[in-house]
Structures are given as C-alpha cells and as structure tokens.
Amino acid sequence: MKPDLFEAPDYYNIDDLLTEEHKLIRASAREWVKRDISPIIEDYAQKAEFPKQIIKGLAEIGAFGPYIPEEYGGAGLDQISYGLIMQEIERGDSGVRSTASVQSSLVMYPIWKYGTEEQRHKYLPKLASGEWMGSFGLTEPDHGSNPGGMTTNYKDMGDHYLLNGAKLWISNSPFCNVAVVWAKNEEGRIHGLIIERGMEGFSTPETHNKWSLRASATGELIFDNVKVPKENLLPNKTGLGAPLGCLDSARYGIAWGAIGAAMDCYDTALRYSKERIQFGKPIGAFQLQQKKLAEMITEITKAQLLAFRLGQLKNDDKATSAQISMAKRNNVDMAIKIAREARQMLGGMGITGEYSIMRHMMNLESVITYEGTHDIHLLITGLDITGFNAFK
Ligand code: TGC
Ligand code: FAD
Image 1 (cartoon, rainbow, N blue to C red):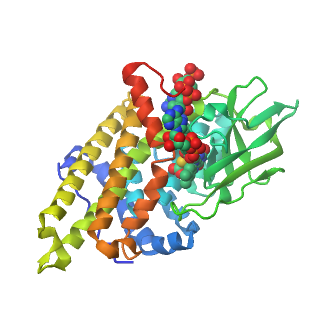
Image 2 (cartoon, protein in one colour; image 1 turned 45 degrees about the vertical axis):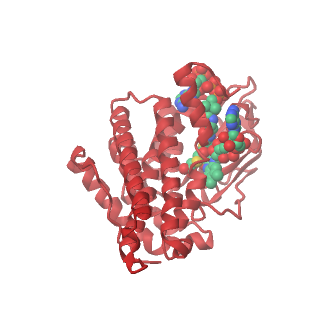
Image 3 (cartoon, rainbow, N blue to C red; image 1 turned 180 degrees about the vertical axis):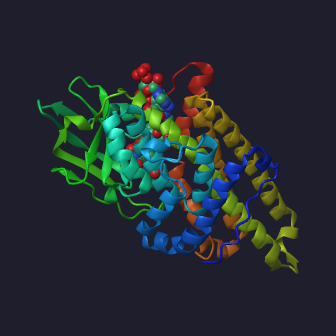
C-alpha cells in the first residue's frame, strides 16, 4: 500500500469552531491511525482478519467510551471529541471504527445508562481499557429492520434467567468477552442482559465470506438454555426504546466516521489527479475531473457542518433521534458516492489495494446498511416531518 500522506480538507475553516482540546484529541487519533492502522490495514482486510493488536492503541486514544465519565474508566470528553475520534478512525478503516463504536455506544453506553452501580464498576473500566471487548445483540435472522419482532427470550427460573435464541450480524462477536443482548421476558417486554463468554450454552460462530468490513470480525450470538445470573439484567430501562437509545449514540458517531472515509477518498483522488498525466496534462486539469473533485469537497463540507451542529445539539442534550437519523443517512450516502467517484478517478489503479479507496467503498456498503438502513432512516425523517408512519 502507498505511504499515508493524508491531509484533511477543511474548506470552510471549521477548525476555527473547535477548541484546543478538540484539536489535540483529533491530532492524537490521526497520528495513531497513520502510525498503527494505515501500514497494516490493507493486509488484514485482504486476509479478512481483525487486527487484535490495535485494541490497546484504541483504548489509549480514548476510543473506548470517550464520553463515559472518568470514574468508570472513560475519557469524560464531550460529544464533538467523540465524533472527531470516530472520524479519524474511520479515515483509516470503517471496520476499526465499528469495533470502537460497538464498544463505546452499544456496550459501555447501555451499561452506564441502564445498569446498576455494581454493573458499571464491574464492566466499564475493563471495557475502557480494552481488557474486555464487547458486542451488542439486537438483530436476528428474521428481524433486522424490525427489531421489535425479536424472538430471543428469557424465562424467570427463580434464582436465574434461562435465555434462548440467536442474534445474527454481530460486530466483535467472535472475540467478545461480554455481550449486551436484547431479549423478551415472559410478558413480551424487551430487556437488556449482560452475557459473559464461558456461560454454558453461549456460542459465537464467525460469519465468513464478507466483501465488506473485512478487517472487522462479524458473527452470531447463540443462546441455548443459557443460565444468566439475575444480577446481569440491566434494570433501568426496558422496551425497544432501550436498544434504540444506544443506536442514537452509535449512529451519531457514524455520521462523523463517514466523513473520515470520504476525506480519505477525496484526498487520495486529489493527489492522484495532480500526478497522473494523460494527453500530456495532469488529469486534474480536465474539467470532468475537476467537477468530481469540486462536488466531493462541497459534499464533505456540508457533511462536516451537519456533524458539527449535531455535536453541539448532543452536547446540550437537545439532539432528536430524527436529527441523528438525518445525519447518519446523509453522511454515509455522501461518503459512498465520493468513494465511487474517487475510485473512477484512479482508473485501474483504483481497484487495487495500493490505494484505500476500494476498501472504503466496500466497507461503506455495510455502514449504509447497519445501524438502520438508508431506507429506514429516510422513513424516520418522513415520519418526523409528516406525522405518518410509513414503516407498517
Ligand atoms: P416504535 O414503535 O417507533 O418505537 C418503539 C419505542 O422506541 C422509542 N424509539 C426510540 N427511542 C430512542 N431512540 C430512538 N432512535 C428511538 N426510536 C424509537 C419509541 O419512542 C418507542 O418508545 P415507547 O416508550 O413508546 O415504547 O418502533 P418500531 O417497532 O415501529 O420501529 C421503529 C424503527 C423501524 C425506526 C426502529 O426499529 C429502527 O430503528 N430499526 C432499524 C434497526 C437498527 O437500526 N438496527 C441496528 C442493529 S445494531 C447495529 O447495526 C450495529 S452495527 C455496529 C457497528 O459495527 O458499528
Ligand atoms: P432487512 O431488514 O431484511 O431489510 C432488507 C431491505 O428491506 C433493506 O433495503 C431495508 O431498507 C428494506 N426495508 C425493511 N423494512 C422496510 C420498510 N418498512 N419499508 C421500506 N423498506 C424496508 N446488528 C446488531 O444487532 N449488532 C451488530 O453489531 C451488528 N453489526 C453488523 C455488522 C455488519 C457488517 C452488518 C452488515 C450488519 C450488522 N448488524 C448488526 C445488523 C444490521 O443492523 C442489519 O443488517 C440492518 O439493521 C438491516 O437488517 P437486515 O439485514 O435484516 O435487512
């Protein structure tokens, strides 16, 4: 793979809106990606293997629980810092960002928000340091966009719960130490349970043959009469709104992360357009290539402003779920379109692993599908502005 010469575009001087702390946090994540991700990620993606050695570095840059309070091992940062960290990691690879998103927003967040003080102290510091890795089980083989239909269930056996069911498409599942799993009780109410590796009847087979997020491990969570201690139930929120609340936090991070992937594709294509000579000129001197680049930087700038404003709303605890959906949908769509255009600008070289673009493009096919598909987020906006539910 080519050396990492990334220079981040900032066409509207959005950096002027950031604090010195934001810039320092971003610089440390950016530096880490250049040093520890860029040189190895193509090989791991080609091998379809998660590079486990990066877990320590992810913890060190604050990627596990950036906004979780320091008393629980988190970094105690604001939401814009969280977004900037996700942006920089996804600049390296969406699969690495997935690992961090799941750990922070889908595992640490529900334990922090819906768990007991004992659960927070038991799990959060180990998750923040990367000593333990987590996964989040919501999707099932027959319930993806419609998680409310889930059939995974547990029964109260007196001194423990008995869990049965299966979750599919679970990031980090093959190596997770703990899983936050959503299941229905005997009344059909959804609750979160913390499942630990080693519990009898709990297995995590890996899903193979992915063309996307190849450097992220994806698998199943299978529960065959798993005895779950009663103290592993998350008591402080129930119903579908509990897992959806976690998704709000993860979707927000993705809205920033996608900008990172788009910036990397744009920066690569811009540099290539100045170096690649055809018909006696750099291809960047041709109007058609300039149109592509001009439209890319316009869309990146719009996405940056959307993410920044959403970050301010999140900091003030005023961001709505529908606003988060709009940003996730827009920014991922923006990134995937830029990846496709940038890929074309590199001609044949664009399909090789010499450059990051094709890997970003393939990764973004998962990002546009998980955490709510492109269509589902459109319907969330539609419902919000019209009041009519077009899901059912
Ligand atoms: P609906 O009746 O609308 O809502 C049920 C309850 O949930 C509340 N709610 C929310 N709460 C917090 N945040 C949100 N975003 C919320 N959206 C809805 C709602 O107020 C209600 O509460 P209550 O108290 O009245 O019960 O539910 P529905 O069954 O009609 O479904 C709505 C729909 C389709 C929007 C929702 O289910 C949905 O978002 N579907 C998409 C599923 C999804 O995003 N799955 C993601 C799985 S995890 C994942 O992909 C991780 S990838 C990670 C990685 O690798 O980075
Ligand atoms: P379906 O819900 O079957 O959708 C198929 C198509 O139908 C889509 O285009 C969808 O937009 C459309 N559709 C569905 N309903 C409607 C409707 N009402 N109106 C119009 N169109 C509709 N899940 C987890 O729980 N944890 C994870 O860690 C996790 N990680 C993932 C990692 C990867 C790599 C991938 C690919 C997925 C992951 N997921 C995870 C699952 C992901 O959230 C689901 O794939 C996603 O929610 C869509 O569900 P589905 O694949 O079953 O598609």
